[in-house]
Image 1: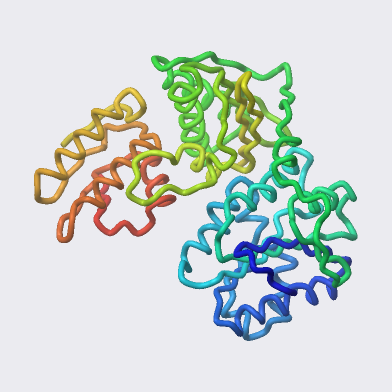
Image 2 (image 1 turned 90 degrees about the vertical axis):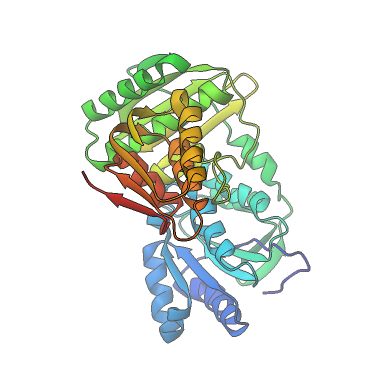
Length: 307
Length: 88
């Protein structure tokens, strides 16, 4: 694979089978290692094992991450996986294989996955980083592959590298910024600054009633506190919090009249000694999925949490 | 210092000032948090930032902090050496 003069390189790799997977990834890894560059591989467990077996001893020099766990919530892949690795190696060019989209991704997860792929281009602009994103072209929907052309400037298909003619990550972020459907049975609580603790108590009680237990209740409380506080501070001073159960998870949505204008909000870790700026990041770290619909008319942020 | 109740938006400024005051004061910082029921991320950030401003040789001892605070500290400031946690 050729590297252009641009510092950030973000190709998609379409693979039909294990052979194509290894042919597209192993030389990438070996080239990085040979150059003394830090290499990380964050892919679903089965592909991780495939690579571990093929790499043999050199796998020890690679940071191997199970993307199904670390990247379950696509909203935390940029800060917790990709930026964390790149920032840990500030003096070298960094090589990463990141596979955030696999056939088991749910319809609720997919829009967040595509937005994540699109936002990588913004988050890493100007950085000395390559992120190669494998796509299971044999099993993923053609619409998913079409989206990959929009989120990656370069696509490698059947071993051939081509510039994407439809690359337009901003359009993708906007296209998946859609109203979130909510079931009529959801319980709701309206809040303002004075009753933030009541809003949290209401949501936590509902979450427990819906079956959330143990440490996940603590996580739920923290996430609700951050979203409702954001509404009071940045979202017009008040909002509503909605809670319901769906597919074995508890879903919680906070709505307010603010507009989330920074697409990277919640994906940029602040400096260690900075006081603010960790609310949405915390929600991304703690929960299984975050979906956002935002515009001049207001913002809805929804998270999913299961036991 | 002894803190009780919730550390959230309503009490944030007061909490940040109290921590700054103790950092400026010199010596180790002792915080009895066994009466605190909840700390949001901003409240946890104030603790971590204060601990980073302590300088070498000084430490911050948290007595009985709520789970939410420990969760935030381990997530954003793993291995912050100046902070020591004790139970009751």
